[in-house]
Length: 332
Image (tube, rainbow, N blue to C red):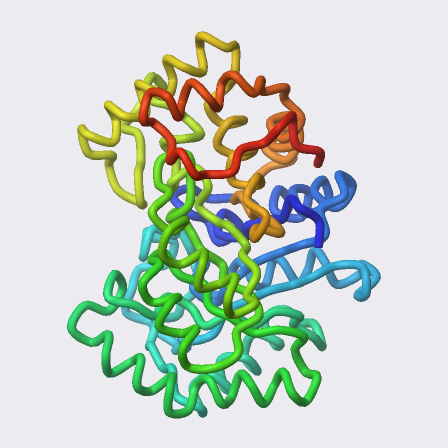
């Protein structure tokens, strides 16, 4: 795996439209920059991200990249929603609606449908998507039971047969990842937004369980869906966890920004390099939607960040004292 990966959410028109040409150019730029991990999901643009990702990667040497996608949501035809309206945060013209299904049959159907949308014969890493109370509320136990009773078995069969190389979970909460670790052998956890420059609670609960289990981590949402990339002074309302950032989050980011400014460090570079510093983390996958963003991400990964910067964050109680930090700029 390359330590920098490609998060495919923006290719599904997350919050804003992206043309097919721009989507392909973005994947091409990432490839030329040495990125070899590409993540997508049926949910991203209701199939649009998978279609675009497959189109952009199909001519590449298949052994040279790692492709992950997700299962747990089935896409069903829907002619009632106006096309190109924003649905689930995606400005997409794909005429489908989502139905959750974590059963054995649901996982197998989702896997097969993804192969068709991607136009590829192989998926390397298959992740069960968005189990947990944050997504399902009172329905959490029902969906977890369906996964434990059949969905995990489907994924394990695909791994045992060699159809996929690894299985795991992709989620925005730590608690459900810990639950899934108890069901069976998990190779990877894609944790979005719960281990960042703003949040490190997972360091004390989930991470030790991953180490004991033997599961490695891929981190998404390293900018907490926006605020660690834009900061607090950019035009518009800063986003945190896919919603307007609450005042206490804005205040904490302002404090981190002040430390950044005193050391001449950009907030986004600190966020990216911090995420890469933990030894359990093998890859981060920022969402990318243009060749310019690819180049900016490479620059952030290489930006010099002094060791004193991290010590000052810890001294100010803005960073967990036990969190590993980079000794120098991370290499792309």
